[in-house]
Image (tube, rainbow, N blue to C red; front, top):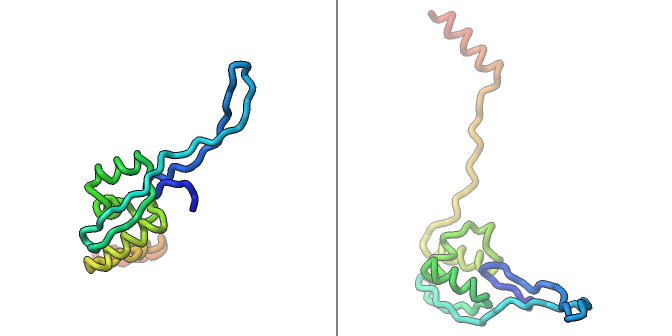
Length: 122
């Protein structure tokens, strides 16, 4: 399992240790991940998540797991969070909105034909 926050996307970073003599050696910076259990009021079950402390603050700010998941578009969520959002939408009876069909604009020639017909009618 990768060391990655499921909310913020924070992951392991690479950097350098620099000694007093300024020798550089590689090191890793690990995110401050916590394994926590969150309850979904809508689905009525618990979800175990690995969150950074910043991710925990984000969930708290949005009012819990349900509030966070519903406030974000699916494209901005991880696969696990997107599955939770889809389950919530299914439970609420709200399917994701289908893609809108583009509005057809008449071509220039069609608009000219309408103008000419309008002039003839006068």
